[in-house]
View 1 (spheres, rainbow over the protein chains, first blue to last red):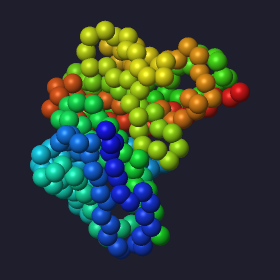
View 2: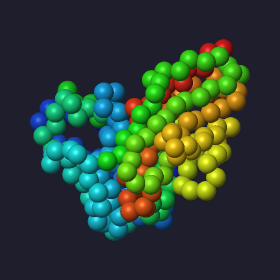
View 3: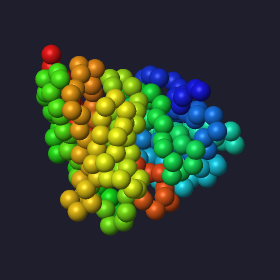
View 4: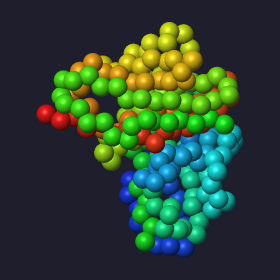
Length: 112
Length: 115
């Protein structure tokens, strides 16, 4: 059974650009969550989706957005990138929102 | 609001020695508790979880944790560590109502196992 797949693994962007990160959950999982990991702030919750609906949102500016498709795949978008957006972005999938979450390997975004 | 405090940022220990990584949480509602491990350049792997029932929870790789409601703690233990256990460990909490899968993480504890 394939795990959670995040693409790309590494990304370098320039300040002011926008970026889209992708997450393919484990087959059969309908819930996807996103987290940002930085050395200073640690792991912080971004969004939670279930069946294409956002169920929960973390305390991030509106530049951070996400969506989930009918096949449960999810994308997150960050517009007008800032240096502080450099982080490891982790996606987690679960069967439903209150069952065990399995994490992908993450996308490391570097903003220069 | 919920919060998680991992009391040690780094824990150095010699191989084959026992180890305890400490975690305290704060919540006004019932919670589910988790421990995750992260190896360099990897995502998070679930070690163990407490949802309900027995307060002693056994996980993978020989780890176990004990839920102590009165002390609001969920410390992780291993009786004998290996070099391969060197990694970052995260304690996390989610609402016990099951209305959300949102995880609140502690700041992490780096376990350094020395030969």
